[in-house]
Amino acid sequence: MKSITISSKDSGQRLDRFLSKTFDRLPKSLMFKEIRKKNIKINRKRSSAEQILGEGDVLDLYLNDDVLHVKEKHYDFLRASTDLNIIYEDENLILLNKKVGILCHPDGKDYIDNLVARLKRYLYEKGEWSPEDSSFTPSLANRIDRNTGGIVIGAKNAQALKAVNESIKSREIEKYYLTVVHGEMPKKSETLTAYLTKNEKKNTVTVTDNQVQGSKKIITGYTVLDYYNDASLLEIRLLTGRTHQIRAHLAHIGHPLYGDGKYGIDKGRYRQALYSYKLKFSFENENILSYLDGRVFQAENIKLLSDYKERKYL
Image (cartoon, rainbow, N blue to C red; front, side):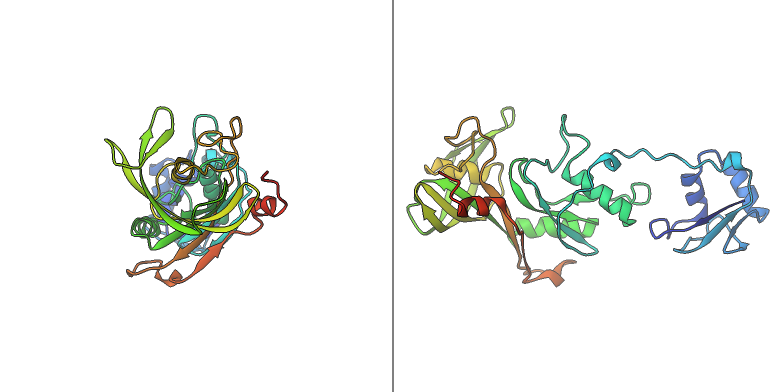
């Protein structure tokens, strides 16, 4: 005899589906037969194949051990790191402070350990999500380059993902960055407009003042927070979210980011001084996340800031 206590992640399922998912050597014909013979009980009472399991229910199986072999689960995300810096979390979304050097999504070299894999592992081990029980996969609503750190929004359900995507598009979620650029900015604060063209093969972008074929409009706002020697500390408000927008746009106007070997003057260096440090929720339309209206979330212990204060950008 084997007893199983139903956990929160397994609750809400039909008995027959739970058994088929859990035991890989239990034929359906035998399962239905043993249910009818009262050899599979829930809370010591007779059960039915379509009965819904609840959290805390005790399932008693009076079956031979050879058919009670538990399926071995092989999920790649369980090999990801458990290192997550959580800024905020509720039943719909989670705000993660991504470290510099971590990819948001897998690529050919870093397929196993990336931010979305860490999120999946966290929610799976917490009992909030399982790939077998849900058609939705936890997703990241925004993306940050590997060598840029900062706040990434994770959605726990389809409704939250839709609401976040629509709110980013309508600018109801405001994204702010900190960066250190070469040179003294011409104005204390300004909103820049230009056009960006992406080269998919080279993973680079080109910024022009006028629209050209294939280009998309970009809008980048900046405010100067401090200046010393040749380094300006800026707060950036991202009004459009294009690939490499901040790096390429500021380089285009003659103020490339420190450490940016792709668009800047620091050739051979690829740890650009850029951090997505603040999010502001300003909802105009009612949605599943309206309870966050007016909330501001900010990352802490930002190395870029401490490096700037210690005058390391010289």
